[in-house]
View 1 (cartoon, rainbow, N blue to C red):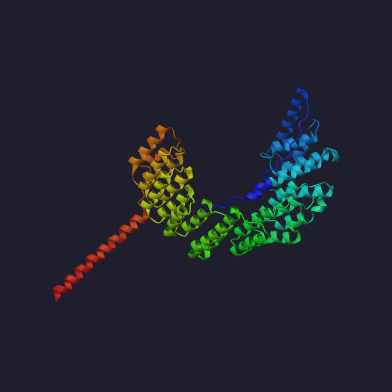
View 2: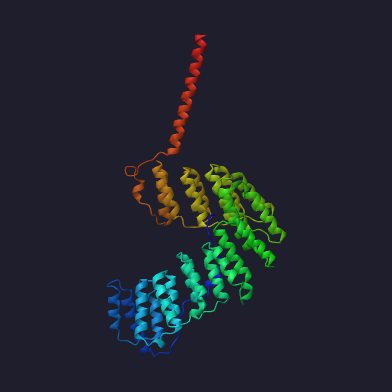
Length: 476
């Protein structure tokens, strides 16, 4: 199944980065209620869609409550999903102006910058970062990680690198977190070359706490995004030279890079080159798993290499790597797409016989393919298998099959499915009008019409040829 997964290292770096929350304070019941009322009043003004930013500030000036640093953070947290980014920024700047400079802490600035970075507003984020630097405040490493990731996502890699090079001006050390953050952000967008330049100026072995394996994983993923198998191979070799053993994740990343490149430039090399890499993995006692094979199966299916897809599935069984439902899906998919419906059904039956319980998407995708190639009867058979497995979530399938049947002229079967869904309490998205022959226009499949025309021409030509030959014989 062809998709890019979010890099594990990026998730690992940012999974513990949470927005700062105000510390619990001891209030009496009256004070707690008053704080809630004050916060509700300000939140209503900040999230309002009426008026511009100047009107927002005029409304905030009418606030008579006691504004505190924890209250500012609470309001931003409460409004960040509803209020436009610029209104959040104006509220924070107004709070900074109303409160004494020392009452808003560095943590409040960092929290606000992270919120703006999360909302990917470059201008608003840039304003607060500039203010933080002018006032000599400290940017913490977690905030830099958010900023770097956002800037790279917005296509501003050079700006992210500029902040990294000048972290000393933000009183933020270029430690392991900062170095790994900028490398991870760049590689996640395929900017592995720029990430390597960072490493050339900041040797990770000289920075305390940097995990070389994490850095190499980032670089591998970066070259994988670029589908540059040559550079990815260099990273694998460099890891071995430095005594850092590539793990299964590293090899699977490299396999994805290699297969994607071969799919575009050398489809015939998909199987031999991938199997060579798997032999290399086994030589280092790293057994390829179902993900390793599924990467290859996905590319083989997109190249419509049916026999090789089937052989790889059999190879998985003989090498002790049990296929998962994704493996069977990829093989069944290419079978259906190439008109091998019996073999596709055999794959589905084999998967069920192995006791594998696929996700609903397994049936959604295959039924959609069968309907797309005008094989509704096979789609109905597969739907019966889905109902037998008691997966639930049948609504989307009914919504596809009922209109398909009715537009194909089989209104009786369409109505039968409609009544079946209604009896099961399934909510349908399609209208009941589709069951009315006077409303629904019946379409004859174009492919079938073309085949009938070709067959008619073929038969006509054969008849004419026979008549011509018999006429010549009579003339002789």
